[in-house]
Structures are given as C-alpha cells and as structure tokens.
Length: 336
Length: 254
Image (cartoon, rainbow over all chains, first blue to last red; front, side, top):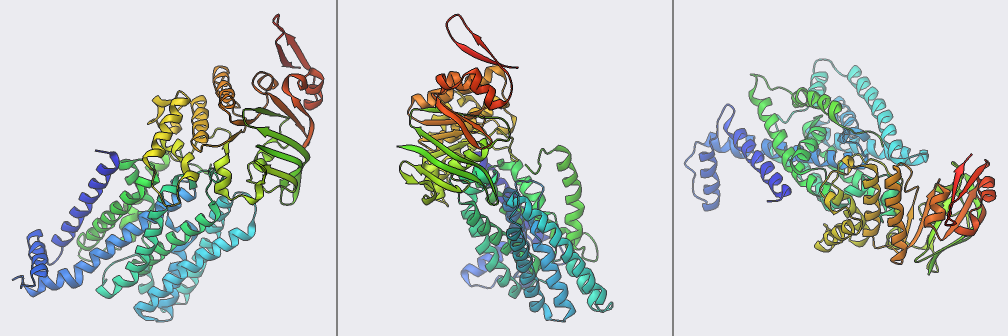
C-alpha cells in the first residue's frame, strides 16, 4: 500500500469517527444505529420509527452543523497548504494576506450596522476578498525585490491596519447588544448553523477547493524561488493569482460562516505531512480530509466540554499554540 | 541551431548591468563564463534564460527570438541549474527531479508513468539512483548539485545553463560534477557554466567568455584565451602559472 493511500485511509477513518462521535455526543445522543435507521428510512421512504426529536436533531440541527464544520475545516486546511507552498514557508496560515482580518472587519461593520445574519456573512465574505485584493494590488505596485516577500510584508501591514479598524468599530459599538455579538463572532463558532447557512458556504468552498486541488501537482514547483519555477516552465504570475484567489475564496467563505478560527490552516497541513510527506500533490487531498475531521472534533468538544459552549477560536488556539512552538523548535523553515 | 546573442545589453528595469555581449552556444559545446564577483555573470545567465528581458540587441534560440517564446517553450529547450540551495520543504530526491517534467505535462496533470520513468532514467544517468527516496534537504552539497542537474535533464532540454555548479563543493565533488557536465556535451547538449576557477574552464570548456564590468573582455577557444595576462586583466590581480611535464597548465592566484 502506498503512503498516499494509507494516509488518505487514516484521514478518512478519523473523519468518520469524528462524525459518529459528533452525532453521539450532546444533549440528544444519536447512536450509529439510529443514524443507520435514518439513512435506511431515507432510502426506502419508510418511517424510521425514531422519536421526532432525534430526526430534527439529525436533519436540522446537528447535521448541518457537522457539515459546516467539515467544510470549514477542509477549506482552512487546503488554503493553508496552498499558502504555505506559495509563500515557501511552513509556518504561514490562510490569514497571511489578511483574508481573516478583512472578513472580521466586514463582520463587525455588519453587526454595527445591524445588517442581520445574512448581511453580516456577506459583509465578512466581501471584506476578506477586498482585503486580499488590496494587499495584492499594493504588492504589485511596489515592484521591488522578491514579489512573494513583498506580498507577505504588505499582508502584515494591511492586517495591522484592519486590526485598528476592528478596534475602532468595537469602540463605537453599543456595549450591551453589539459588542457581545462582535466578540462572539471574532472568537469563532458554529452554534446556530442551520441548513440555509450551508449554501453560501458550500458553493465558494467547492469552487475554490476544486481549483486548488486541480493545481496541486504544480504547487511543488510554485514553492521554489520565482526564477527557478519559471525556468522549469511555469508561468508563475497568473498561477499565483489563481491560487491566491481560490485560497481567499475558501477562507473568506469559512470565516463568513463560522467567524475567526485560527490555527487550523497552520496545524492541519503539518499533521497531513506526517502522514503522506511534503509532496503537495498527495498532501492536499489528505489535508482536506484531515481538516474536516479535526475541526469537527474540536466543534464537538466546544459543544460538550462545558455547560456553556466554548468558542472555537479559543480551543483551536489552545491546541494550536503548543503545536506551533514545537514546530518552531524542530523545523528548518525560513524565508529562503 | 544555437543559443546566440549579439550586441546584447542586459540588466534590470532601471539599471543596465552589461552591454555589447556576443556569444554563441551550439550543441555539443561547453562554454565557460568567467569574471570577478559582482560583474554581471548571474544577471547575464538570467537574461540568456529569458527570465529577464534583454534591454537591447539580439537574443535568439535556434533562430527564433527568445522573447517571442512562451515560458513553456523556453523550458523545452533551456534548462537552468541554479546555485545550490536548500529548499523549504523536505521533498524527496525523486520529487525534486520530477519537477523537471513541469514543462512537459499539462497544468492540471498528475505525473505520468512516463514522467516517473524519465526521473529514474536521469537518476541512473547521474549515478544517484540510490538517493531517490532520500529527502533532498538531507543529502550532501555534491549530491544536491547532481540532483539539480538530473532535474534539468528531465526537462529534455537542448541547452543547460549552470550558475557556479561547483561553488560550494569540496574538491572531489567538483571533479565529479564537472565531468558530468563534460559528458552532457558529449551527448550533444550545449552547456554554459559560470565559474570562479579558470582551471575548470581550461580543463572542461571548449570556449570561454571573460566578463568584466558587464563587458566581454575577451572570448574564444579556452586553451588559447586563458593566459596569465588575460586572467590578470580579468581579475585585476597577479596570476601564477604552473606547467606540468606533460604540458598541462594550471593557474594559481597571487
């Protein structure tokens, strides 16, 4: 068995386990047996014989939330892989070009203007795209030195400006209604995800992930110095735009659906590397599967660990930070 | 059929590095590019590879203007072996060589069986087949240079351009790499390399181009061109010459 096949099987198994655990844990436990009967009743169109409560939990509450967690986790992981390759550094994450901070600013403005849930999600999505577009435009305008390094530095600067913008809107916000909503959103959560929320998430994630997966065999070359990649026959300019656009699309969609969830895009590509090695062609599908299972497991923990839901961003940080420190201590990476 | 430049001026957008360069690299030939540090060797290589646009003059690949070719078309003919560096990701040696197949496959294609066969064949050709599954980041400098040459050959190019192929290598590995380079010309490839060692140019190159301040100080057959006087003029320092009993020449600095 090849390492790639084995890695994908392990990732798929973990994802399946995370799905079963997510259904089984919570106030209304749904056993694997119940799930089987529900699926069977769907196939045969006969009544499942389960309490209506359980059916509602599966189809309308926990089911959509599980799908959303898998989609967001896979999206962040695959975008993380793409950005780590593009920026030639294993320590970058999908928010390196300001996708997350842009989306966050969009969302807090949406909350400040009382736009409603859909309006807030749209504002977040547009905010993420505009932020990365601005970073890219500034990076192009600078036209000095290594284009990749210029982009990263621009991303840091613009991200810090966006952070100031978020602070300002929070300062203006109504401290009794709006500020708690903003705080809650900035910490990330999938609580309250319903079926209609899945459509704006599913479309962008599938499109962006399809582009990134289609280009994954070229990611190895994109991770080389610019001139070397071009000498190997790759038109790096257009390809970089396509990869940034696709990765931003999936990141913005996931931030719009779930708020800011850090660390997943950084940690999961490394876990996947342990399974299948650094080759992006094999890495990216495994990372997508693993990311889905990882975020679902964390979301299940967020639901069940305490009487009140724990924000996702807190849990991913608590798990991600020690991992990152270990990575810094043991990895060779650098801006080479 | 050659990679040919005449009255070539090159450099970056706002800064000219060199001008009046004429050279001609034909298949089966080795051309050495010599010159002091910071006198425009690497920039000239990048221009010859089409990575930097020429500022003026003519630059043609097998009769066609290099600037008119696409990135992919150029990579079908010209392969680049950059100075050895350690990559960010610990790709295996065969994954690195596989990158040489980029221009030979479509943008979305996974590596084919033919690509993988080509990789094994190139690793065999350079005698490094035993390294195939080792991480590229963990092999020696000399081995890494051979891997980069294997990657260039996997492109199936007609010309190979190497930037200081022996710069960071120990004495034994310098010999190994240089004899491989000579072998490539024996197999019909046109080879251009830069070096800091005139002895390498003398021993392994057919022709040499001496580059100072971005100008061609002289060019011609290596054996005739490389004299103590020319080298003293090139490097601005005294060069000592040693002649063996068999008539072989060697240069020593200072």
